[in-house]
Image (cartoon, rainbow, N blue to C red):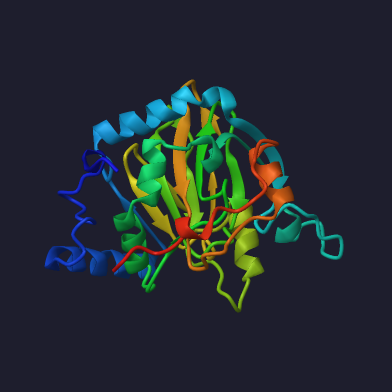
Length: 277
């Protein structure tokens, strides 16, 4: 991993044994616990942003055009629930996707697998270890949103979400979220429904900048990307760090999410182990 791609002066994630690292992590962990989301501005250097964007541009012809309708919890309609229930409140999702199997031997994959990134994610989320995803596609996913594209309101299945922002749209493409909207024990459908209708006063709106690094408790945070306007695409890369080294999509979901070229088998175990601490 080229260290010149990350602003290590502002974010010394490569020096985990130092006091400045421990102070930085403690501050960000408190912010994450309180707010459900943190956004580290200028985490990437301009050199890093340009390098990762060029790799994506070089592969745009193999990106999978993903189009679907979903509700905040998934894709299946719940016929036993009312039509206006959040589990039946569908919205459109559309983007071009490059999954990890599209990105072998790239600089952006090197960023994903860089041991200091894994350690930082463990430390900032208060976990002893994090692992690379065993899934050959879902571990690293680039989303390219062009005009009219966006992402419907949803919760993530993973506890936390890690997003590297690479390009801003001219208009639209706003990241909207409602942190801490549900818990493991309480789905809070009333407030979810209020957010879906746009009536909630808890909706946060963020026009995230290229080069920033967003960490979010996605399992508890309702979030979406509003439709893109203009010719300039919105580009982001999702890096999936897991608490279970065997986390993997089923094959049908993988191919629906990333196209027919998605591989069948999970990655070998040696690629998911936690680096030495």
